[in-house]
Length: 147
Ligand code: DQA
Image (cartoon, rainbow, N blue to C red):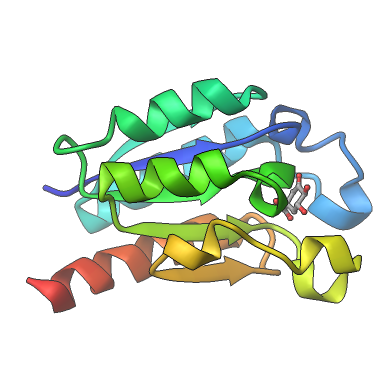
């Protein structure tokens, strides 16, 4: 059974109350439950984590190396700034889907830049909380096509 880490960056612990007009009313705990249910249905082992700290996110990415099969990363604002997260993904050699709840391309220009996209298999954004299970399916079919 493939194992995925679903990793969430800064401020995503506040989902449900944080700018619900942008990010929706679903909490991160709801999303984790959705992902675990979806994994049980589709045959994926799910690890789920969140941190507001860039270094802790780097450590979590390193920890996937040789241990897990895929990474789904909503790096929050670090998406747009963090060469360290980009390098961590390259170092861990883990197939990665970049994820955002909102359509970052329809928002401020500074959100159009992504360091994660440069090393990701693909990007899912704009589908709200449903994007997490879409990302799981996308990553699973990417891995199946590759093997
Ligand atoms: C986000 C988009 C980012 O630009 C923002 O900084 C976030 C959330 C999203 O899921 O839509 O924190 O990653």
